[in-house]
Image (tube, rainbow, N blue to C red; front, side, top):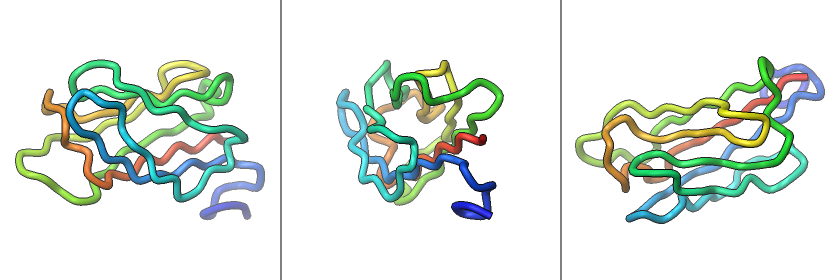
Length: 110
């Protein structure tokens, strides 16, 4: 058994994210065994990206976003693998500034 009950060799990224204005989210990394730094980006209103080249393997990558400190009028958080290089995440409310110590978790299975 490996990290967090996942199989040995599974790669894990966990970070607390806070986002304001039209800036990329700021990540406080809690755990990263992906083998590189996930670079946060601002894609569009309430849509953000985490990029790390060639790591997010198709059919083996799981991503999820959950709220930490809640703010008023939050909607559903979402996260998904977009490509081998990108995970896209955000809030379905269509408004920036909803991520306050939100938890982004990316799991890449072997």
